[in-house]
Length: 118
Image (cartoon, rainbow, N blue to C red; front, side):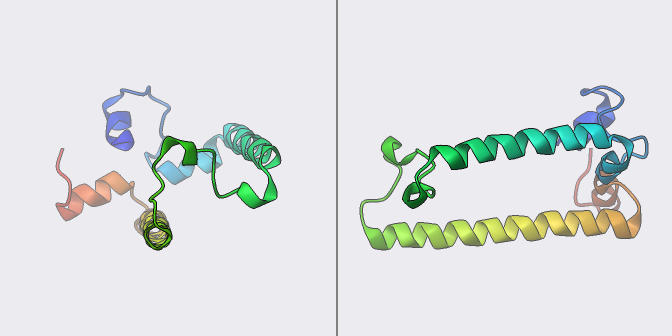
């Protein structure tokens, strides 16, 4: 969706790199990339410092009441979360490899395959 909006000009002309490939942003604007990664690193470091070593998996959301009551169900949720995270990492890796191999933007690859039509 963000790449489609970028092609439509919704985010401005320079949202994607000049070639239209999202990965090209690493080469065209390394300062913004470094600043973004630096801010994220600082925020994660502050979060890590603020929590106690035994409670770092909590992320301060247990008080909302989303955690299941039984321990077996909670373990089941943890396994599902790990599986979903691994699947998401594989999907992103596949997108990156597809852009690198075909040397075409991901959205163009999806349109060429007929998977997405805009």
